Every structure is written in C-alpha cells, then in structure tokens.
Length: 352
Image 1: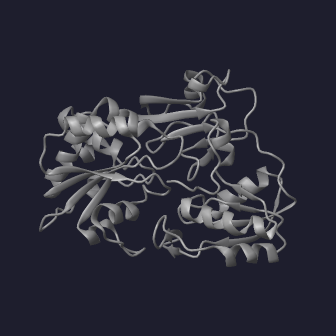
Image 2 (image 1 turned 180 degrees about the vertical axis):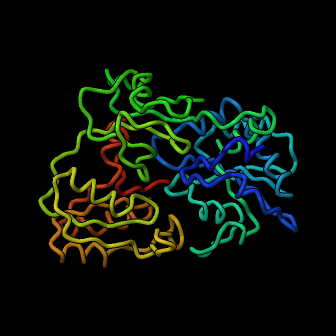
C-alpha cells in the first residue's frame, strides 16, 4: 500500500519510502522519526505533529511492523514544547520513545540524528542500516498512516509559505498550509498567503539552507517543503570568496547567490570535514565542525574582499571568530530569507 500510494521521503531527498522499508531487520532494529524541523523558518512538520500526534505515532508503528523493528524513536528539538507535550500525552506504545534534540543546524541530517539517538557516528559512506536503524521524515510517517489505514494515495503535501508577503504583517510572514494538492502553482500558494510583496530577491523552494531557486509558474512537487520570497539582495563586494559546506547550499547555488549580490567569485573552498561521496558532499560529523581559519585565509589570499558561507551552526561560529579579524565581512546564504521574516541572521551563535 505504501508503494502503491507513491510515497517518497518528504524531508527533501525524495527516496521511495517502500524501498527504504523493503529490508526487514533480522535482529531488532530502530525506526527513527526525524522531526527536527531542521531548517529555520520551516514549521509545517511541527504544526502537523501539534495537531495530529496520534497520526505520527500510528505511522511510526506501521513502519516498525513492516521492518520488524523492536524500537521506535521520535527525534524532535526540545524547543518545540507544544509538539513534545502532544506526543507524550498521545503515546501509549511502550516501544516508542522521544529523544529531545538541541537547537542547532544541521540537527536533522540523517547521521546527526543517529548520533544523537543511538550514540553512533556513521562513516560518510554508511547508510543508517549500518547502525540497525531506518530514519524517516515526520510527514512521511503521517502519510504512511494515510496510505495504510485510509488507502489514500500521496496526492497532497504540507508546506510553509513565508517571506515577502503583501502587507508584511508579522503574523503573515510565516504561514503553514496542510494538504496542498500536488501540482498547485507556486504563485497560487503565495496568493493563499496574502500575495507576494511588491519586491523580493528570489523565490526559494525548500528551506533557507538547502532550497533551490524557483519561479511563480513552477508546480508544488512531492518534496516541496517550503516556499520563501526573500528580501532583496544588497550590493555585495566586488570580489567574494565562497566557503562551501556539506550541510548547506552546493557550490552552484552559492555562486548563484554571489551573482545576485553582484560579486565576482575569486575563490572557492570547502569545509574541512566535507567529503565527496557519489558526486555530493557529506560532512564527517554534522554540526560538530573544526576551525576554518586556513580556508578563510586561503580566500583572502585569492583576493576576496568578503566571504560567503552557508555553514552549520558550528562552522558559522568559527568563521565569525576569524574572518572579521582578517578584515573580511561575512555573508551567509540564508541572509535574504531570514531578513524577509525578521529573523536574526546566522553569524556567531553563543547559546544553542
């Protein structure tokens, strides 16, 4: 039924859910629900959990039964107090527990979740099965419940619509829409939110860290989690250096942002822990990162007048500890999105 529903992972990767659940555990095993809602601004997963905790718990139990798991864990940030309370009150299953996560990026990365829940740090080439675990997104689990109990195909998607909304009232800057039909135009979703503002920098499909640029005529697809109309881009420096992180925007996306700043990219460096795996970057230990002084110095040597980063909480802190001392202002790939909703920019974060 999960296969026939056409369900895929809804955290962004879009891997077919039936395939992820196709190899039962031989000796126990754990199904972990990723309810971290890792990207800033996005809030639709937490809203569904708050409204329908029983649905998530039922979807998790179905997944556990399919793969013969002996344990189920819901990994959720401690700061989401209402959702945590709702889950605790609704949970009657002794095999299901909660793990509360700290508020840092990228706490929702698959290997970070396993590290926090099971205490095991997997290699960049390992799949969760190496830790006798399966990790699935919170909304995916809810859609599993619909596929099995209601025989419902995967035809709609939860999402967050945010940013430069007409009127700019604070309560309209971030809105959650549940059960949006697949194929709905991006422009139609912004109209539902109140209409696009008179000016914006770009439209992002996804979150501020890992989303991609989209257009008003594009359709909502299975992996659409967010639609963000960003603040207009400021005028950047003439020459900029780019520091690419495995947990955030890829090099191509960073160069796109640099172009929107009106800046020439004169150097590109990768985070010290970013390792290439099958054409993409993976972090050796997500969110627990070393200093980036050598990388920042290399960008300055290449002629950069500022640096553009997309780094995790830890790396952002280390860059901010050295770049300003080297006379390099710091831009972050999430700046335009966060400015559009009046969030603090990601720079040096003292308290997680």
